[in-house]
Image (cartoon, rainbow, N blue to C red):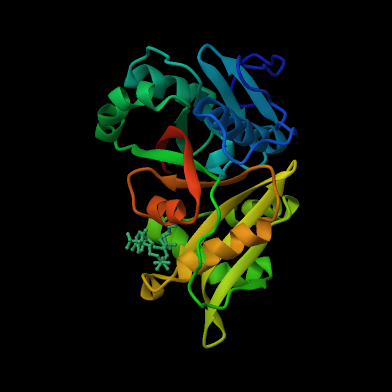
Length: 279
Ligand SMILES: CC(C)(COP(=O)(O)OP(=O)(O)OC[C@H]1O[C@@H](n2cnc3c(N)ncnc32)[C@H](O)[C@@H]1OP(=O)(O)O)[C@@H](O)C(=O)NCCC(=O)NCCS
């Protein structure tokens, strides 16, 4: 029994992109439109692979992974065009579409349509994040002499917990870590780490799907930042990805890590906006 109360309809192909991740070989550098379309197809392919509900609504798609309710990224209202709706109308729709879940999440594919709503969502206590999808297009420059090694997924559990607490202090993550583990390992997750006194203090994670890949995590423990570990691990993840058609990484468009990624050859492809009301 689905909880959203929305009609069950066939998955829709929206104009300009496909649910299947494109498998043709592409040049290292794409036109802006092509790069954005491929980033979007990558995001959609991840949703299609994990979510059991993909229901069109007037301005996009509601996606749900009903057995993984605490995994916010797979339980969202996607807004794929300018909805011309108020903050209240969108929040009401999210209440209906994500009924039964503790969080609310609305992802705008068009940042220009989202920006005018940002202040209104923030006034209601929602978090807003401009997210930039970056594609690896330029060669890696020489990097720091820091040893990066591949480790088992569970070897960096302490760092995963620390990152969660840094972003959402006091939040009980519930089943999220177990669901994230299962999904990531299903996508062939490779974990790369830097150690100090044998204990990992930084990690990066690479996941693959359909001939492309994404660096899904880059985290350095706060006490060890600013000394090249983030750079060394991101370089190692790019090298580990090898000759993939597309290599993606996402970053907060208003924060510093995107500069680190740009220095390593990642170029902006698509900017989205996420409105999130955590539990
Ligand atoms: C982003 C992060 C991985 C960088 O690791 P690091 O070991 O400090 O990085 P390096 O020393 O190799 O490179 C320094 C660059 O990283 C970024 N950086 C460094 N310290 C940072 C900090 N406290 N916050 C955000 N970015 C930082 C900047 O781009 C910096 O370059 P700049 O000083 O010219 O702005 C680390 O700050 C971190 O774990 N932040 C929290 C988690 C996070 O935001 N991850 C990235 C998700 S997109």
